Length: 518
Image 1: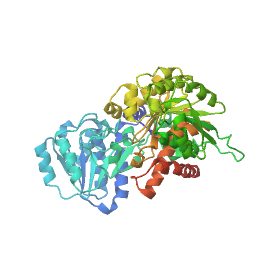
Image 2: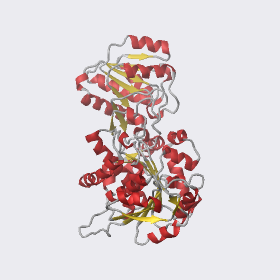
Image 3: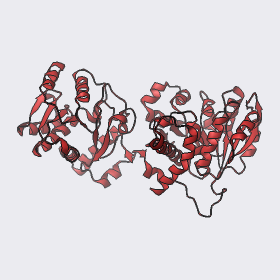
Image 4: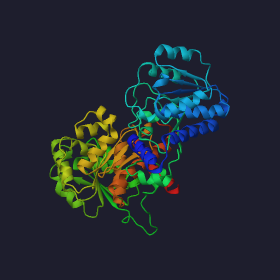
């Protein structure tokens, strides 16, 4: 599903007006009438109201004035409360406010806390409330009497329909700009916006529904070149690698996993499980010799190889042995459980420079590059996947976790472009950034993934998809989706607490099968 930034949506509307002759008034009319249609169909039990439209002075308020008029024409008992002086409303919104006023509809105005309190005090209990305060234009913190209105709205007890996006949510980032409306239904126009799918704002939408505002589909498709993509089952399913009937284990690729150390063999075993459950034909795990017996005891389907070590971690001399293990391999997964001892860190940097195969790098592999990104520059562009969580990302790019979380898309896009890698920035709504600037936002997953070892499974899963011949971008997008989809399946059976990484690995084939059947 395509997503638009706020700027891209404004550009689409501008071009529709300039090139097609669609006026802003027509677009506003179509938007408001579309919301009125949805309210009439979804909330028939609340008819005839009372229904309150809480409107701002901008275009979002204008949409509210239009829908108030249409609902009133259909017999709803509508009151519109405008959080502004009447003469502060401008443009197309002012035109529709004047029409609503001339129709005799109940209109109230409040531009300060005292007046707002008086207006709210005389309202009867509402059967439905429409939030048409700010929409996608909000770019600063909500405060004062407008914040008070949002607090009242959230506590009024009536279902809430948000026009375009719940007020208080930044439509570009999903951040909360002060108090924000908790909606039951959010109705947006033409395309979802980025802020609709990123947390924490995504948790306030209720159900998200689209309304056609009259921009021809072919024109939109021609205009929307730089859309972001929300990865859903349809998009992920298109990336599944083929499974030819005459295929054998060699057909489906051989993944080399370089992982583990004394006390951390579980990470290596989980990465191996992710690789095997991805559909890869063969998986070999290379680990320090001192850790090898413990790892071998955990592995049945995967092969294992001991590597030169010192004090339980990989030694620099392991490089030559790893290079010999590349024969017959299709991809490498590097990092889980390796530790951050200096010899290992130095070895990881040399491996990143030297390995010619597609590479997925995670965990301690990322830690080895913190403050030393030069090895990435030695690799072929687009041949590497990094899978950091926000803390690891902060160390990689020298920002705070708060700065990362405030602009997940921007940070991921910039890093991927500068370092010529595919970046998987994990978290609620994982962001996958390609070196060419494309952005994919994962639509699967739940809090059940917040457990140790889940990232190790993901590393092996993505590596296994690379071994099956997928590009780095496709392997990252599909791997992240399948990882989350397996967790979603488990949540329906077990809930979202207490899941462990082994549960997830075992569910991956079923998640993949479900995707193939859609």
